[in-house]
Length: 251
Length: 304
Image (cartoon, each protein chain N blue to C red):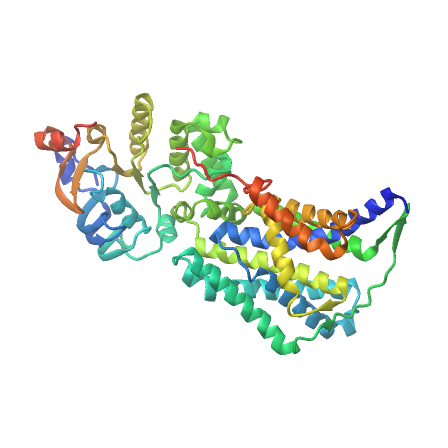
């Protein structure tokens, strides 16, 4: 199986890794999903755009099992995961890095990473992954003994992503990875996401900075009031003036 | 006896008392950590643990002897039994209430406390049960200070249990997960941690430690009754608050500090031993007023 280049990307025949079908969910009062359909193929970066409160975070939480889907189907690599508990879904290799990074306060950088590999019983495998994460993010190795919550924002983002990598994800759900970061760090974070993807990790990205997200992504969905308003290749979305004006103004 | 001798003697008494407080306070603080519940039934788990230990000792004492060997077996079995009871209490009474307002689950804890107390009240007719053992009164005299072997075994056992707990919490994946669950449950779920299982393990360990204290206290003081968990429950709560509720080292330190303060407090002229509970709860009030986060507690501010 080979993905076709460029314009053919959207029609890629790569395996469907994540399928969301007519999913409805309620979380709080305004963050409701009213029938979401989306698909992510293996190897892609797919981005979810939309205004605050459109339901982007709820979509991710519903996929990862933190919020229960009221109806609809979610499949991971063909397997129905609708209604599974969040920790069961995580063990299948769908790893959600939530908004705000959620570093465990009071635990060291290394303990945070070790817990990322909680489900890995074999200590040697855990150590190997730990070494790989330190190779990828040397700063985390330098700070391994420090309280993870005392790192700078950028370092915390690396820790959050590194911790997710400890789970060896098939697909990463990233919620606003650039939030609260200085511009230079935003660029760095985007570089990290690109590298991860080139290394074979499939990514579903929610990002407030739509311009950046569409530069990285292969495909994009625009969410409005809990519904998919439109979808297209990232290239086409970048060229769509109405999208640019509606969702990239603040970018 | 010189003043130093009196103080040394109170140091020993304080350590014994503090060991009981610390063991019970640990369960309080661990359970508070994972589900943010002040488990007011915890003192009663200690009480039931004492009765189960007594029951086992009555059954096996004939063959194993009712000295520390038999008591160790009784304590171990009581720990297992109370660990399981703790898991059942969490499943049946608390788990369905986790999404409810905080006050509801607190009232549930009071209900569980009443159920345990009244069950034992009914079974024992409210009588004090003599916890007969073959423990002697031998000991070592160091200077003018007399330390019984019982006191040494008791403090030593409590220390071993606490070292085991500390090792579990800091070295094992489930121990780390327990700390993680007390910080951020949803993040734990996303890391593949079965939060319900971690909560169950926490209840098992916390209740087992209370059972160890209950059995040892019964053997040491020689009697048990249905109301004996009430006061130590409040004392353990005080100890947990002194140490910083939610903190495991805090509960250990808080228990010992409270035990020592009580022992020394009775020596202050004008404060006899009949005032020692007033003394303890005055300390609770002072801590709550001046250092509500306790010795090892962290404030809830989070870095963005």
